[in-house]
Image (cartoon, rainbow, N blue to C red; front, side, top):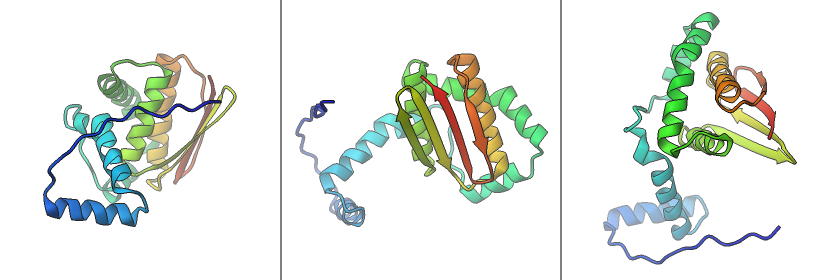
Length: 176
């Protein structure tokens, strides 16, 4: 397999000295070059941040999510996922990616998890995909996402998916 380098371009910016110092400090903390770190920031902006407010997403602290989902019954979680969750996720992914197919949805979902500071691991062996999501947000959060993802994969992407979940993890598998 031959990997081709992404095409880059050189550009000059004037950046406030305090902002630049904070960027340098953070890039050192992450043990990456300032150039790589700034590219990561730009990439996150064009793939996620510039859309967030346009699609109605709001940041909520994890302890609040745990509390809200924890107070709901399993029936309420399933009802919410079926009634509005699938359509909202579908519409947001479509708006941000411009299309809904397997690759665009996976790309959107991975970006969403990363933007939410949720660990996600995607392994591909041949045509088999396995996702492992570590979240520590409770069983109801897992149930909600399992239900929404199952609906999207079955009804929109025409894929059968196998799920396992608990209070801190979701894993799912499908064949390409």
